[in-house]
Length: 261
Image (cartoon, rainbow, N blue to C red; front, side, top):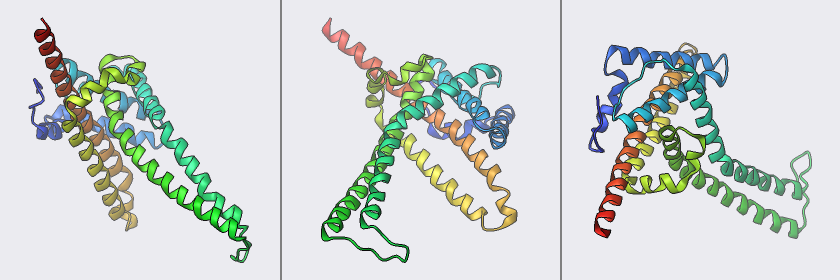
C-alpha cells in the first residue's frame, strides 16, 4: 500500500493494521508488548513507540503505509526513548503551571486557618485574599487545559519531524516543521480530533467493562489493544498530514523560486 499524496484515503489508514494476516500478527506483537509493560514498566513501551516512529518514517520517506517487520528492536527502543523524552519536555510547561495552580488552590485553606471541626475563623481581609486566590486557581486550571490542548496538537508534528530527520533536536526545530503544519493544518486537526475521540471512547468502554468483576479482567487487555491500535493509527494519520504539508510547502517554495527567476 503506497501513499503518493495527501489525497490518500483516510479509511485506508484505519484499516492498514488489519490489511493482511502478517499485519495482524505485527499488531498482536505490539499488544503483547504493552501487556508486558504492565509487568516491566516503560521498557516495552519504548519499543512500541519506536516501532510507531518507523511507521511514520516509512510513510513520509518511502510513501509506504505498512506495518514493518519487528526487526530492529534496538533502534525501536532508542527511538521510542527519544520520542518519550520529547513528549516529556514538550509537556513540562503544562506540569509547571499545573503545580503552580495546585499551590494556589491550597493557599486559601491555609489562610483561612480551618479548624478540625470544619469551622473557620478568618478576617475579612483573609476572606478577600482567599477569594482572589480561588479565582486565580480557576484561571490557572483553564490555562493548563488550553496549553495542554495546544501542546498536544503540535507534539505529534514535532515527533513526526524527529522520526523523519532521525535526530533528537529536530523535534525542537520549530522553524523546520512549523511551515509543514501551517500548509496542511486541516489534516492535522482531523488527526487530532480522531485521537481525542478514540481516547474518550476507550475511556467509556473501560468504565462499562469495570461494572462487573468478570468484565473488569478484560479492561487491561482491551486498553492495551486500543492503545496500540490508536498509536499505529495516529502514526499513519499524522504522517499522512505531515507528508501532505511537506508536499505543499515544497511546491510553494518551488513556485516562489520560479517566480523569482
